[in-house]
Each structure stands twice: as C-alpha cells, then as structure tokens.
Length: 432
Image 1 (cartoon, helix red, strand yellow):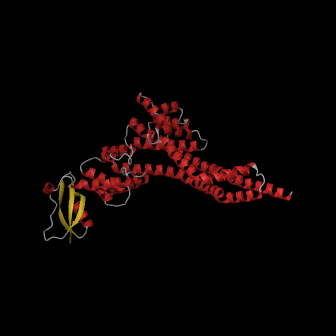
Image 2: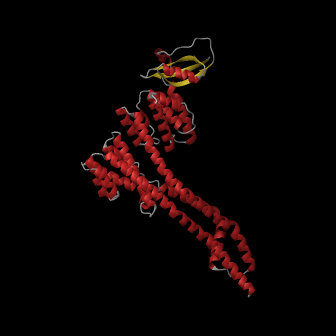
Image 3: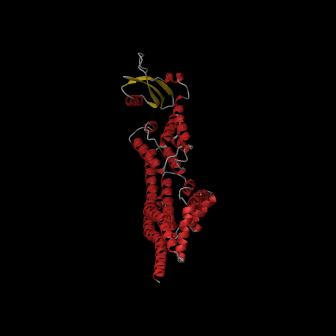
C-alpha cells in the first residue's frame, strides 16, 4: 500500500489535509469523494511505519493557508513565462470543456468534483491552468459564473450571463447543453467559410509560386539567349525581363517591404477606426457581403433567442448580442436599437428604422412580439439565415474559383506571350 499526502476541502469550504494509504492515486481520490471531500492536491510520500490518518476537520489548522492555490499559480506562471500572456482557450476548447462539464453534471456529479475530474487531465493545452483555476475558485466558495468571469478571453459575456441565469434557476446542466448547441452552430458557420476558402487559396498559392519560379529561373535563361542573338525585343518582353531582373537583384528588399507593409496593415486594421473601415468595405463587396450579413443575422437570432430562453433580460441580452455579431456596422445598429428599447419601444421597430437589418427579419420579429412568442420567431429566423449562409458560401466558391483561375491564366499567359513574341521577332529577323 502506498501512502499519499492530500489536501482537500469539504462541501462547506472547510480545509483538511492528512496522509492516507491506498493502492493507487485513483483509489484515494474515490475514497476522498465518498468522504465528502473535494481533493485539491494529492502527492505520493515515502512509506513510513506510522498509521495512516483519516481526514479530520481539525487537520486544517496544521496546513499552511496558501498550500493549495500555489500549485495552480505556479502552473499558470510557467505557462505565462513560456508564452508571454495569459492562457486562452480557443472556441473549440470551450466547446469541448462545456460538453464534458455538462455530461458530468447530468450524470449526478457535483460541480466541484466535475471540475476536479477535468483538472486532473493533462491535455497540454491552454485549458489546463484555466480549469484548475476554476476548480480552486469553486472549492473556495465562488460561484461558477464569477469564476468564469475571471477569464474573459476564453469565456465571453454570453457564456457568463447564461451560466449566471442557470445558477439562479437551478438548471445549470440544461443551460450548458444550450451553450454546447450555440458554440456548435458558431463553429459550423466558421468551418463553412473556412472550407470555402481552402481550394481558392491553394490555387492562388500554386499560381503565385509558378510565376515566381518562372521569374527567377526561366526568364533569366531566355534573357541571356536574347542578348546573345541581339536585336530589339518587343515591349512586353522588355517589361517582363525588367521585372525578372528587379526580383533577382532586389527581391530581398521587396520581401522586407511587403513584410512590414503586412504588419502595418494588420495593426491598422486592429484599431477601432481600422475595424470599422474594414467592416464597411466587407458589407459593400458583391458576394462577400452576403456571407457577412447571413452569418451576423444568424448569430443575432440564435444568441438572442438563447439568452431570452434562459431568463436574461432584453437589454442585457442585446448588449451581449452586440458583441457577438462580428461586424461593427451591424453591432452599431443593435446598439442604437437598444437605446430605443430602453424608451419602451419593441425590438423589431428600432431595428427596422436602422436600415441595416432586412425587412423580412424585422417582420418576423414583429410577428413574434405580437404573438408573445419571440423565442420561437428568433429560432425560425436563425434557421432561415443558416440556410442563407449555406447558399452564400456555395455562391462564393462558385464565383471565386473561376476568378482565381482567370487571374492565374492572365499572369501565366502574359509570360508565355511575351516570350513567344520575342522568339518570333528574332527568328523572323534571322530569316530575313
């Protein structure tokens, strides 16, 4: 039998520690759980003839007050030292965490035990220190919503507000299930757009690589041959040879300029003015705007419906939705509508007055408000714009592929025609 030193807390928050004998760590954890304790840390100790201690409430005085939190803080410090910032869970990690926590709570496990079970998994990802911190906060008596609010980079206000509503109503497992559905919809929308861009990006990279290869390796050989033959080359050929020589001699400078231009543009587009300018441009592009609008309207409907279903107040729900639609122009229309809702107006009327939301959406909202079943109307709106997003993505891929092929054909064709024109001119001069 091995001996383990444990630090744990009871369901009332009392701290205890001691030494117990068990065949392995898993058996010890189960033993502590049956005793009504939530383990914070369990470490193996060398075998001694002393009898194993049973967990007592009086043992809490013998332990230093900061023993348990130090483990999570050290892990967090190591993570920050390695990456230079607070850990942050991706949306896929949040979805996986929410799914597992919902399953554990639905099976009858307490919140502290469920978080402890998740914290014991060393996944090597950013969620490890976050889940450990959540567990420690719950053991200390903090509510789950307040613990989640400590990590706004990972858990948005939508997540925290719904969990708070679930805690107030005593329906936290069902709220977590709705959050799972919400994040699955968000991920599905992102994957649709991402998959639509894969093939065009591959075609663009291959075409660009082919042009660079010809500029660096093919055209210089033709240029040397043309110089040996002499004669006047056509204008397109001279332009092409000049571009090739410029790339050979100043390619490093061009690469540096493009790199810093990309970094500068990226920083500008992250400023409030840059984000607003980018979002306005995207809403004016012929095909892309359909994807942006359909995705934003679907998120608006699904998010608002989910919040209202879980008892979140309308004004608070609109504030949360404003930060989830992903476009500042549409978010500004929601913010303006929220100020009118404060004055006692309905939701549909101020949204219609803003001119951003389509009439079909506002009409469906108005019908839901009149019938007193706004959540069902929002569900129908969400499904409608989910289908619209599918059609917009298909149209985007259908249009983008030939456009990309056209640009590549123009570039390759310019190179081929320029070379052929020079060959024809030189051969005709030799024949004459």
